Length: 386
Image (cartoon, rainbow, N blue to C red; front, top):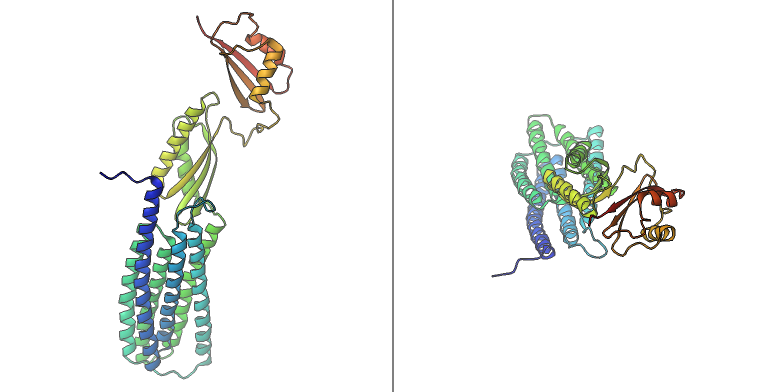
């Protein structure tokens, strides 16, 4: 019987499988883009369709984007290392930004050139019927590769692959525009062909801008939507033991969500209970949003957003034990001291498992001896029964 894989080994295997799936679908799309690009450029040149030529250039831009995707995916799907403990997904985000920029540049150049042609009223020859055939083949091929690529992108949770799928669909949209404009031009509205080229270029710019803007928002650590943030805060507040959530910060890395949350709990509970409450909050949040990768929770004894923060000037445990010993004598070896740092003060609880022979370690004596210290808040002594 084979031993189960460790979480790190399983993660590496998942990354390798995702990389293989991404490479396969991207290579298939790249071959299809190259073939369609050649067909459209040649058909557009031979049968007088400027719109089909622009559409063919769009297909070649898909080939360039596929090459970007292949190179970026190979790096971004590497396992976390010492220099990148959260992984390399931001490289994928940068690749999406680059892809969107390429689309904007290509679209702008084509829009400018064909707008000038449209305004110049150049003599245009009506396109021939093979343009319709080439555009129809492009629509079918690009819609198929869009659906295939998007399905893979959603399965491996890759925004870059999904973006590349939409890049393919813009080619299908532009080919539909070519179909309509070519039919109109063949009926006598010859100017429709150049107008269609401008429309296609605008579509390319719009899609490129959406990719670019989403990537920029992620790179500057834009948080989750207000709706998702409220959902996560409500889950935390409804968790048993949580008094309040006074801070929740979020950011995205690729498709993954990273969270930092501050949970206010009762100040007199143990460290382990506070940690267990945090674990329950983590479980509830992961159940609500499946792409949460990492949650760092901080357990607070008070809401320090609206109250004075505990400062480093307050005495440490050793300093307080020394103050007690100097004022009331050496503490029994089996005594336990519990400290609560609240509202800029230290509140003491002393637990005595054996009787205090000198009867000095009482709540009243501690208050009397230490009450003049600025850091002193309160004291309580607990004596075990014999």
